[in-house]
Length: 275
Image (cartoon, rainbow, N blue to C red):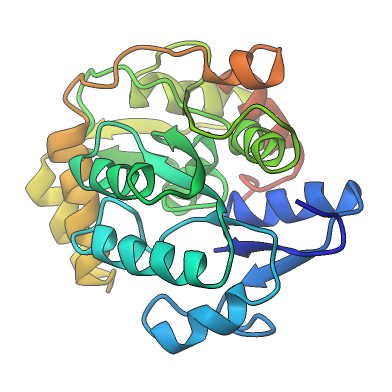
């Protein structure tokens, strides 16, 4: 991979993508943002945009929108990998999902493709509470979810970005699957308590049924496919299958992963949870 050719970041404006872009640019690497507003544009729903976006790039970091666990994602990944190889782009780093059968299909496609691949497999992002789907709940003072007592090793998105950049710029990562987690398990209730402590305000967790959760999302206009995906995550994936920590961050970066309490403290200093 040469410094002159850009790296394509599919989903380059997302939680991990924009962080990867910032890090690559700081290393003097050229970046091409793969999004509908990119130059050239990239749209998962319009395959005619894929070839132009892949032309003249050295590698690609691939995130699938809205999530790689969505039904049909594997078919899209298969077509994307074919187009990438047709355009001479062999170095592919895929953001995958932890404990998700549909995500595993995409991993298997990449493994069998002949590409120089790296898989970065993750579960729940810590930043979902400050940049994603749960921030409004935190601001309202009540996080109502059907999460139960299952422990989740929330992973910090900055750790993910650091691992992706290492995979894209350093030798030794081709053919590797890195499963990333935080350093400890927390229930969603415990995670919310950490946020309340860091933010210095009352934020409570309330357990609800999956049906109540789905009804609430639908009532405020959340798209059907996102509602179904979240119901799948809470109703099936959050069953204890991911209730263990891994050494992925340590293996790649030579340091421990960021703790959720440190994430919450840092996020609180930005004022994101101020009301």
